[in-house]
Image: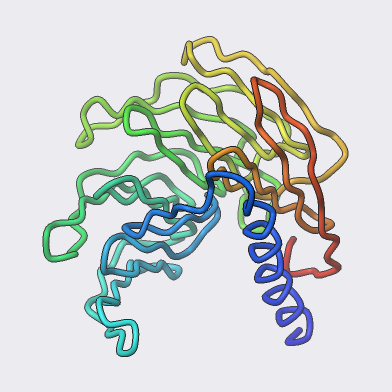
Length: 254
């Protein structure tokens, strides 16, 4: 178990080192110091001088203004089945087995609950573009019983009262990512949708040569975590091309 976990952690580090090296000749070099970049399945994120993490029931806050001496700041009880955390500006979106929580981060780095959107018992990563939240519900992992396989688009016009706009049937969706009018969904393979019309999204691409679990979009690259390792795609002029991949043998990716 420990060997598999170590292999996984080393592979993740190698993956991001390899990705960064491949950007040397692009404009990707600049980074956003105010937040961390992670996938929709992430359990921690950085916003400003604070690190936010989730465990099964709690949202934890660490003050990292001093890199040499980070400090635990506070713990907020959320509820049962907290799975993922996604940042957008000063908002946090928490995916849980029973729904989505939205938190506001105040000037002191304290998360304040705004609302809760409830759905059936399911595994639930979530991302947002500010106007809408995108949630995948899946039966594909343990603990996801009584569930459905569906992509849900949630209207965030009122952050204190999010409402379901529409659901779309999926095969076995997991992680996802959104940028502008394009939504990427790990659904057995990798699917890319035009979401310019939220109530009538259109599939643009489908890649069936990998079992994808999560995805990170960064500038003109898509970094995909899959069953067999990591795949990097190039986004250019409306097209998507595979650039490279690293194979990893680890049960920890599943």
